[in-house]
Image (cartoon, rainbow, N blue to C red; front, side):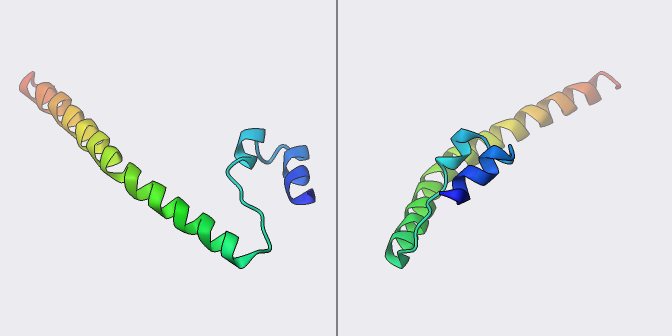
Amino acid sequence: QWIRDKPLYEEKVSPEDLDLLTITSDIDEACEAIVMHHRSRKKEQPQEQKEEASQKASKDAVTDGAAGRGA
């Protein structure tokens, strides 16, 4: 329990951050948590890539527009 209480008491993490932790002494449970995390990240990647491409396109459009105005 101290692994959760101490960082929270010292304001090193927020209460919401503690929900991101899996604390276990069971190797199978630890492996499952890692595998599940990687699976969830793979599902998020395509959306993140689309967002990055959109942000780059927006930045390029602004840069090109500024160059066209002689800025």
